[in-house]
Image (cartoon, rainbow, N blue to C red; front, top):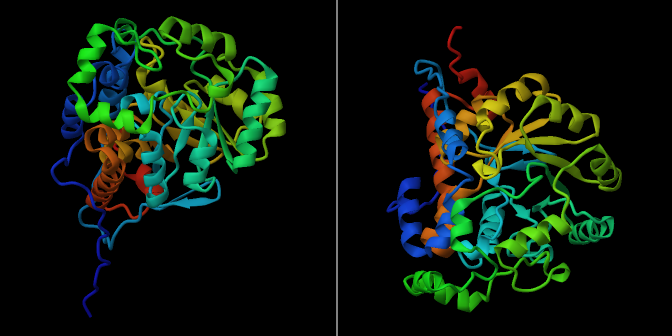
Length: 393
């Protein structure tokens, strides 16, 4: 009797925009230049921004065409929850400045697609609103406050809202040097220079959406901060209010108090991973902040290797930075990561397609990843390391 293969799953996406470059081009046409440059740029000369993706795409996979294969599954277990795909939405600051209401658009689509959404401390939707949308299933990225009272107040709000995964950010000991943002006078709300006014006038859809949803603000931090900060004042506020450099003394009381899972985001060395594991951290998110903090550092995929070698199977190891497509997700998983996160890809899609953008990108990423797995004859995402091409030394 002839064996019938399982039908391939399908996910909807807009076929007019089948690639990330299509979305980037449209996003650039739809949002003001200052918003696009904030999203698209890195720090200093963008060296590590480009290395992240370029070096990731040097990873090659081995296809086994003659092996029996009856289909693939993207489902992935992480911290007791089975997600529909091995990727989630990275935290991004100022999302509502890039595209109005972006955090809520992404959070709603994440629930629909059953993938994790990480809310940033410095984005434009608050703890309580995102918890309502995601039924408490979102993760929260914490910029460590300088004062314990503020830290405890934020943790109280997270616990009351049902968050179970806390992401501690460790790669912002200082504010990244980003020439574009400095030239643009980035502020919340945007600084109304003549140049910025002309940029907004040229993007009527963005302007009308902003009027409809209201001036973007740091929703989570709003109770704690003065109004109308410009770029220099924002930096002063962040330096005064948050103590970005983590250490054991700051992590230990959070670990003692927080009953859910804790992830260290920004981990780039085995030494930092060792300390995190010793402190009882549940997962490592290898990242260099999307190339936005240190231009002279390694790409994320280079940092991942030694950490995977030591901690694979002992602690959950995840990665973001440089991942833009389904094949990029496959490359990262094949390199040993248990899970992946993307940031810019989702924001390009939302900026290009508005309310439909997040759903489009999630469907497209699932389709692309499934195609790669089908091509290389891989049934489960956790088996992708068996398809990694390892050149002989």
